[in-house]
Image 1 (tube, rainbow, N blue to C red):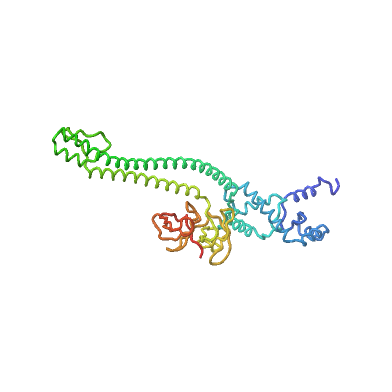
Image 2: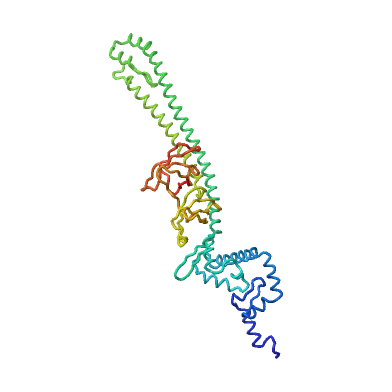
Length: 405
């Protein structure tokens, strides 16, 4: 066999070496060429093809490095999503799996110099939850795709239920209005019946009384008949031994009771309508997101404790995709991007201004009147807007947040 034969031991060894992974420092990302040793890498750097690629790199270095960084990030997240979608894994383990593909984008061509720096970037950008432990950095992938799908499904379900609730509410309101009109009509009928009874009393005490005076001489019954205010029942026979008669004060009490019942019925119908309207506003304005610009929040992310941001207050400058807030820390003026699940509302002192961030009066500004520490609720008075001056007696802490002065 010849010295350079395909099946010689040296040729086979060279192919085995070329097939496996080599050292990262001897890889040229621009030329996508892996060298086996320092001498080979030095010779490659002096080649004409490498010089041409470096000339291209010199024209726009930032753009090329940014392109390699985006490609590296996308491939890394793809591997993390497919292999460790819902598990907590060490950063070195997933990085070694990523390096198993010899054609991957190498880290020395990106803007991250070390794996630790890249892991910290994943945590700050919200791509994954990162933890620094004595055993090293650990990564947990944040499944945004599943969250978005679940939120979209819940939104569709909520829209359907809202439509059904609207129809049910319209039917209930119609019934309430019909019941109120019926109660009002009953009250009017009672009042008109009373007026008719007063008129019939005069007729009865005139002609009928004369006739009774002629037929029988019973003065006690005459006095009783004169004081009577007859109801719309059958006329009383004056010749009965014990006539069923109602006197003036009894009739007035009965009229007052009827009018009171009619008024209570109308009041209860109005209160029912107001309660139904309140429930409808609560259903329509209750969302699963609450962030809005201009409020003061507290950072509760333990992953940011090493930076000194844990339990620190910040101002929401901007809201991204409804669920992520761009927070400017009040002390350091640093700007962070934090998910709303890792934020907490801030309650000001009594008399301070708050914004209602969720519920029936979402978006309204109010003045804090008092707090109930046992029920974790607050008493507010709405300022400005459609509900100006209205007092809300029990609003949960999670639904209000301090407004930046």
